[in-house]
Image (cartoon, rainbow, N blue to C red; front, side, top):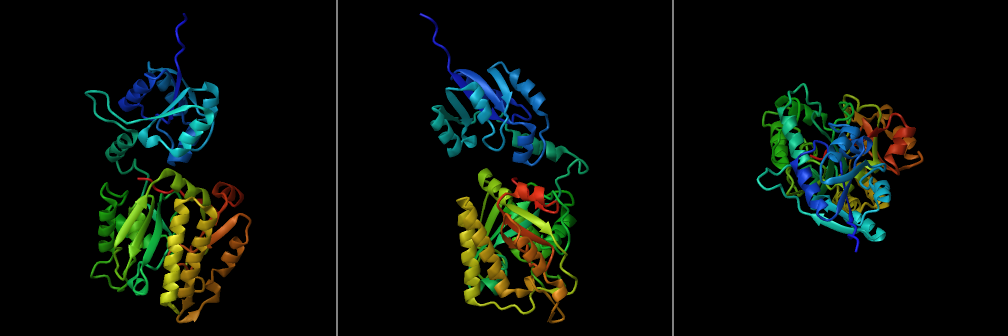
Length: 413
C-alpha cells in the first residue's frame, strides 16, 4: 500500500522583520501537512500598513522559502485583506491556518465556500524564547531611532459627527457623543483650517517630533490641561475633542454631559472598520478661515437642535460599525446640518457682527456637493474655511479624478 499523501496547509502574512515567532508559527502549521506560504506584496503592505515594508517582497520571499518548515512560498497577487485568493487557486490547500488575532469571519466564510478546513492557532513563543511580534519590534526600532530619522510627526484629527457637543454650553441642553479619527500627517496640515493646528502646536512645545508612548486617554488629558492652562489670556476653552482626536488612535467617540471632559470614551482600531472609513473619506482644500472672521456670531443653540446633533452622532457610529455606506453618509450630513443650524457662521462667517459674503464657503459646498460620487460633506472643526471633508463612493477613484483631493490615513497605533 502506498503512503498516504500529506495534506496541503496554507498560511499568509507580510513576514516583514522575520523573527522567531514567525518560525514557531510555521513549525506548528507544518505539523498539519506540507506548508505553503502566501506573502503580502509591497503594494498591499503599503495599502494595509500605510508605510513601505523594511524588506522588499523579493527579499521576504527568499527568507520565508529558506525556513525549513516551508514547502514553498509565493507573493500574493491580490490586494487588500484577502490578497491571497490567487495564491489559494495555485496551492489548492486542504487546510487554512491563521493566528487567532489574524482570524476573521470573512476568512472563515471563504474557506467554508471552498471546502477548506479553517484553523486558528494561539500565538505562543518557542520554548525558552521570548515572545515576538513585528509591531513590538518596529516600536523598539522607532524608539531607538534619532529624531532626525523619525518622520511620523504629530497626528491631526478629523471630527466626523457630534462636533460642538464637547462644549458645556452645548451639551448642557442634551448629552451626546462626538466622533473623531486620528490621522497620520501625510499631507500639509494648514492653519485655520479646522484640523486642530493650535492643539498640535501645543503638543509640539512638549514633544516636537512625535507623541510619547503612554496611555492615550492620559496623554489626551495632559494635552487638554496644558492647552487650557489657567493663564490662557483669551479665556477660550478648547474642546476636548481636539486633544482626544489627536492622541487616541483609530476611531473614537467621547460622551459629553455639561462638562469639558467626556464621561465616557471608546475607541476602535478594527482594521476593517478603519479601512471602510479610508475607502469613503477624502478632504479637499478650500480658502482658510479669514482672520477676524467669527463662526460663533449669531449662534442659536436650543435643546431640539442639540438633540438632533446627538441623534445624528448615534446614527453615524452605528452606520460605521455596520459599514453601512448609505447610513454613514446620511448621518454624517445630518450631523453637519445640525451643527450649522446652531452655528450658521460655520458656512457664512461674520466680521464685526456682519455676515461676510466674500468669506462664505457655500460656493465650495455647491461645487463639490454636486460632483458625481460625492454622498455627503462637512466642514472640519469650527468651519468657516479650510477644508471640505467629503464622504464619497470610492476615495481612490475620487482622488484619481481630482488631483486636489487628499486621501486619509487613519493612525492605528
